[in-house]
Amino acid sequence: MTNTYQGIIPPLVTPLTGRDALDVAGLERLIEHVLAGGVSGIFILGTTGEGPSLSYRLRRELIERTCQFVRQRVRVLVGITDTAFVESVNVAQWAAEAGADAVVLAPPYYLPEGQPELREYLDCLVPELPLPLFLYNMPALTKVQYELDTLRHAMDNPRIIGLKDSSGNMIYFHRVIGLLKHRPDWALLVGPEELLSDAVFAGGHGGVNGGANIFPRLYVDLFEAARAGDIARARELHAQVMRVGGLYGVGRHPSAIIKGIKCALSVLGICDDFMAEPFHRFLKPEREKVKMLLAGMKTESRGEVSA
Image 1 (cartoon, rainbow, N blue to C red):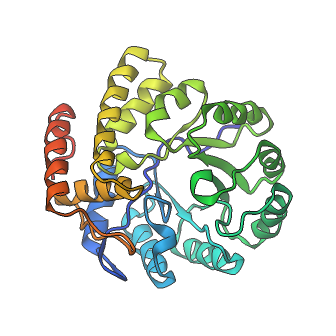
Image 2 (image 1 turned 180 degrees about the vertical axis):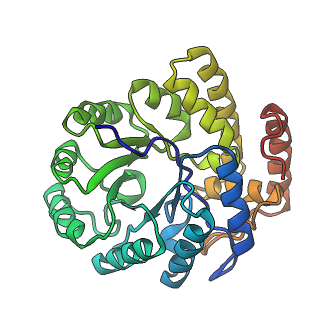
């Protein structure tokens, strides 16, 4: 058995034009942009998509619009992470009704749960979900990680189909790879794009990388080079990915990563860069820095992202 979730699955930003207003035209342009870059799926309502900051009404609209625009050309994954069990189930139901393929869940992120509580939570939640479940390991934001014993437990459930690891801990990643012999159909995807080639060389199946919103072909090419064992090509493309990271250093706060991606997409004319509160888009000085960085990257990427 092999898993069916491989390659680059961008964690899509949520284009907004206001506090509770979706940039519908921008969303469609963004989806067409990443699909033209050869991605194998789309993940909405994750960290990069500002999922927890959006109203439930807007989350439902985003799910419906995304599935409508994708038209089953690639798989659609929908984040359902929430502090309320019932709301996670509700969002999963909307995803199923809209035609999504799977849902994605990080540990509830307010009061930290112990691993026995997390296992019990999964045991209670999965039977309520209408779609297969991806686990999302993001301990920097949730305060809790899926420990190896919890992953072993999750692998006993055929409706839990993989893990997106955004811990940035390659020792943990290698240990998860060691568990895959128990579930060869499980997908193991890496979040931090700086680790994409290392993760694939180690046996991972792809990446959920924020920069693929901007330069989808670059990340697809890097994945394919690493999967083929082409070390020289992978090093060359990895160096380009590291330069994309310059966009994330324009701001001064943790929100700078999402601001940088959204600002770049706005500069390219793909979608609006309005941010969900309490955050706000870059001001003119930061936007000029993003323009300068993008100019060099566009030349290096052979015009891939020209709008």
